[in-house]
View 1 (cartoon, rainbow, N blue to C red):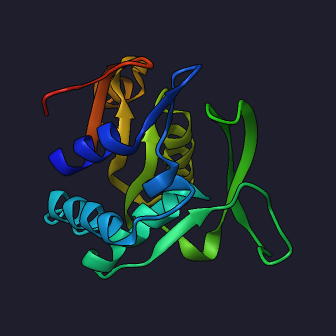
View 2 (view 1 turned 90 degrees about the vertical axis):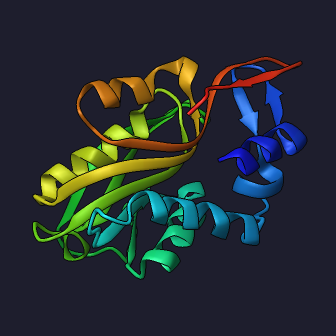
View 3 (view 1 turned 30 degrees about the vertical axis):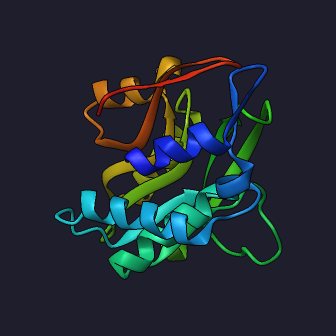
Length: 191
């Protein structure tokens, strides 16, 4: 998505540790119109997949997932990073390592919102080493649902997570793939 690449170049900042800061439009402040355009593109990419639910992880994945869900007219389910009092009953759970926060979370999804009749699309904001997506894939497997694929706004291709998922036969549709970045430049993969 050329518009996303341009927005990353204009508004993104590379921080130490291969962190791409895109807080002005994606994961701190939301550019709602732009997120809706990203959602429209994801909906277009998966239009033939008969998706019944979108699964994401709190917090930054929710906006993009919602943008896609609006165009696909389906619900969004998000994995919570902590089991809270408003999640009662049986849950699917898995451990996910956050690259950005450098910590592990046990994420949960209530069993009432995901089941074997669902066709699930997983959406997240970033794909780096693939830990979050692998955790969500595990939750889909626990539910018996069918995984139709994954999508993310920004894939850090140089960290290999997307390539490992593709090698497993999982469909990965990233809107922008970064092949390299440092404090002076960002190079995008031709998709």
